Length: 380
Image 1 (cartoon, rainbow, N blue to C red):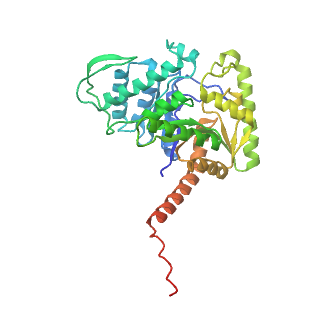
Image 2 (tube, one colour):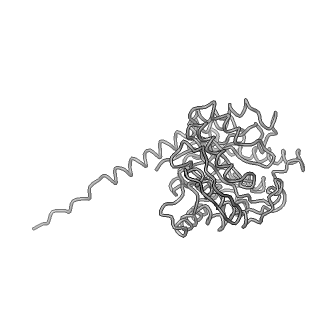
Image 3 (cartoon, one colour):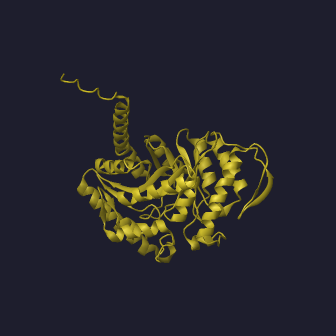
């Protein structure tokens, strides 16, 4: 079973621990960070979406036009553009990148954030819209004949694109969420289902829920599963845990220094199921399984990808392999010093995981190729 590594394509050097040093779109830093991922064994990088953040599409196009190998995961919220327009944007970006695009559709889990760009649908309505949106985009990518559409959220007639993706039949669709409504949409439509880092038992339960939703949608296949973490690594276990505690202290200090200006870390209870689940995991305990650590999630209010894996490169690699053994094929990771941590993770963790996965694959291939054991000769 293949394994892929997803990093972050940040457009500036700011993180939960450090304010950015320049503009929100720092062209040189964006390319430098992307190149670090490409040079150190990562497969793709995520261009994230936020209501006030730089537009990820041109940022992705900029990186794709300068680098030859790194693949692009483009985050997109359906409320910001019409699906036929978005389909052409994505197809153009797939052309620019020579077929390196995957699109991650974000339904939106926070009413306040959605309202910043004029989206006032309820959460259930947003999920219904996302499913319709994805279906339209898929059809626009693959239909060479004009088609009409009349749905709950979109209506148009006689649309046909003259811009098609390089990938055949289309780029992959990524989706995430931790509620039954999310499972239903992603189970039906997603090629990749993205989850945040929870303990192994809860992750296994989510995977089974999504597989069940896929079957209920009539699929004969299931999505590829992705899980995201914030690795904190050091040469020894002691140093790694010291670094972990310093990281939480820096998060708390940054929150205190920024005050209300740091809007991304809201103090009210999160509305989205994923953040609620992360906070529940944090409340249940600081440490889980081999290396999962939750105070980073608690300090940020369960914001996004926020649970850590702490330890030496060997410990963190083995923890990632535990998720691989559950059926997770895409491992998403980003540190708190984006550039240096991407390099360190690429140098010290990715090779261990790839080597162990290769061993597992070889053992599986040998087992499948081995003939059935011949019956023992009879004594007579």
